[in-house]
Amino acid sequence: MEVTMLCDICGKRLASHTCRLCGRRVCSDDFDGKLGICKSCKLGRK
Image (cartoon, rainbow, N blue to C red; front, side, top):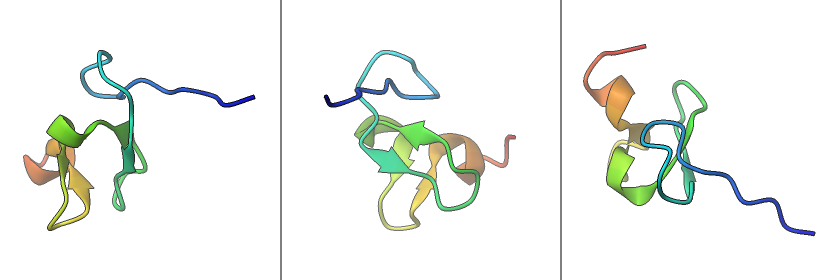
């Protein structure tokens, strides 16, 4: 059985990445692939 997780930031799209700083599971729209971090960490939010 596969578990599907929604993005920890927007809660709308499927989480396909994990932030290397905070561990949030996030969608492609809320992830910076070059840095490997989520939008919240990129903006300095916790």
